[in-house]
Length: 148
Image (cartoon, rainbow, N blue to C red):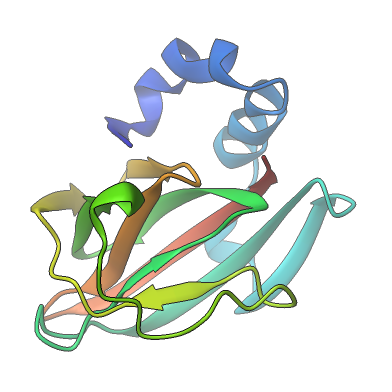
């Protein structure tokens, strides 16, 4: 798990062969001009999902994880809290792993909460369970999915 301002993204490009391309896209694209929904960046290797919605409470947020994709969750507007817990420490699965959606939920509580302001991102690897979209405000964000 990584929490960082987008201005420091170059520090992390060596962690994955597609990170340089992913961060270049995030820095050079007018993300606020994109409509909500899914947008391809590099086939199924990198794509983004633009989301704009009212945040939810910590109690409403569920931990989730992915096996095939790494998430780079960039907050564009608002202040978002994201819960985190290592998948290895999650002992209360709420669902089985859904291969089609690359998604599994847990009933465990996050062990940490990350305050993520606009202009900052969190990276969640397959070993990171995360509970996004926690806020009392509207959140506009981009979730970039990168093939792990």
